[in-house]
Image (cartoon, rainbow, N blue to C red):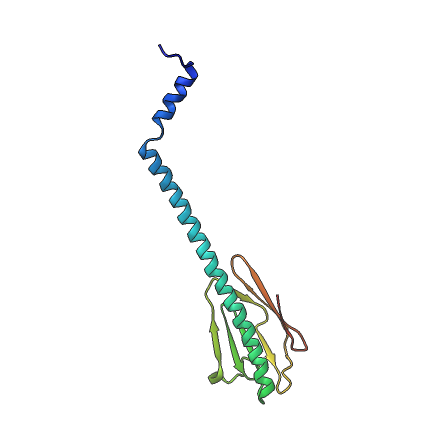
Length: 156
């Protein structure tokens, strides 16, 4: 007969049995699946954020370029805004532009651009004939670009 108390004998048997190899493999497999799903989610979110940043800086750059083109040249110009692209154009309006001089910048469908249909700058002053706020959004974030009556381009 053993001299150990009954509870201690039961605890010793449980520790000796431990986990089976199958139980350990199942737990590890579930852990790897969770890690993989988390990695996919983070990668997708990072790619979407990079695309939004690219679109934001491209729209800002196209606005600045359109304004610069009108102050250094004799022709008016601006940008036309579409849900997934912007077009820098030369002309008083997008409808009356010089099509051969269009510069189209497209973005993925994960980025949506809203705002006025076009922002025009007058030559040779570079003052905007139309002003407004352009909003760029993805699933997680929003950026805004504002063009005021003085031609200042501000970002948020």
